[in-house]
Image (tube, rainbow, N blue to C red; front, side, top):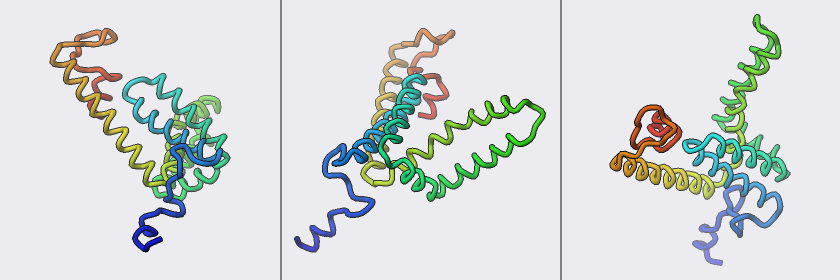
Amino acid sequence: MSQSTAGAMAVGPDAANSSFFGDTWGDRCLNVARCLAIATAVSVPVSTALTSLTVHLMVIAWLISGRAIETFMRAVRQPAGMALCIFLLVAATGLLYGPAEFSERWGGYLGWRRIAYALIPLGLFGLIVWKRRFVVAFIIASAAWVVVSYLAWISGFSLAKYAGAMPGVVLQNHAVQGVT
């Protein structure tokens, strides 16, 4: 093997699997979880129900991979993961005091679980190839929605779910569409 060929092959934590879904059970489950994380990000502006389904399937695939603790620790070691953990710990201190009943405080704290879900993709997307797949998929989906939005706006199409006419708004609402 020549020096240039050896340098081009990635080894270690940035090495890509030889097949798309991996060679072992854990690799396959993690790659399915990665695909579901991408599907979750793409579905956020479109459907709350689809987002909920894909995030729960992602968590299941992540848990049965046998590498949940390993990837979670990878996420916690990153600056964004540390910040999320600190935030969740600070929010948890709210459980210790307050005039509300504990059940109400606990319910309020559980509302922050969506932020905790962000720790899973932080650990899953350690490989550069999967980061690229994530970004490319999100850009393609967003660009497709931009085209659909402009076509709906030009044609005057408005979804029936809105009380007033909102031509061109094809995602969950105009704010979500603007951010996307």
